[in-house]
Image (cartoon, rainbow, N blue to C red; front, side):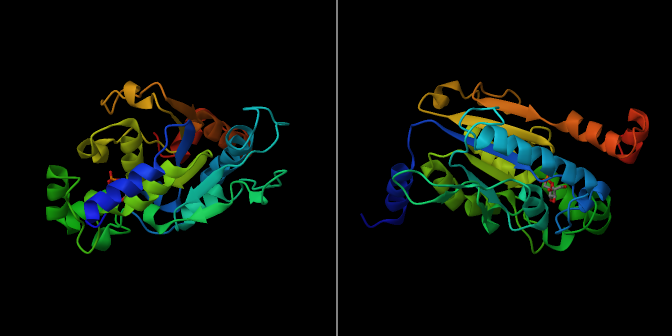
Length: 275
Ligand code: F6P
């Protein structure tokens, strides 16, 4: 087989398998840039981000790499962990335990060993990196307008478009499809919208507009098998039955309140910028 496209199709089909495999997706915990609404950058996570990192580490040990889902004493099983190359995802995943398993007949396996992929770094906003949306509107009025008109196709000046993201995601998707073990991907908003849309059968044109579907402090569990295809809804607002949402937003805020000495919910919301 010589032509480029048939080669890619065959490569993809040989990597794809219909047996059950589970992908977990989550955004990094709150970053310093998130608190001021700045785009991109490489800022570290905040105290709130570290609280989510602790929760995620417990969740991973109990549910993702655990033989008996939810049992703190369940034996560890082989599982995989990917982060982007950015500080905020690496820190968010840094507390996840990665025990070495020694199967009776196989080579030792470091479960949840972190693997860093630049392909799942956040969309690069080029000249708009580090700016707030208001600053983008003031300094690059055309950018705000054009992006509103065509979010998937708009490329930031000296930066990327959603189409660019989709093409750099292709090798990762192919590798993801080839796995049997559960995989946790800790990445970013724009990237996760694209992966989530792909896995749940949402048209890629709709992925950039999925503003509320990929929340921080939430883990999305996607159980894929031969029958998943039949359950896709094609509607980005209605999750298919093979998606389970593990929502830790309340737990993160409760833990923050406790650590700050039990301030009221209202005071907390003010600190979090909700009010
Ligand atoms: O604001 C957080 C963030 O991850 C930015 O770094 C990134 O530019 C943006 O979200 C992507 O979302 P959207 O494509 O909706 O601007």
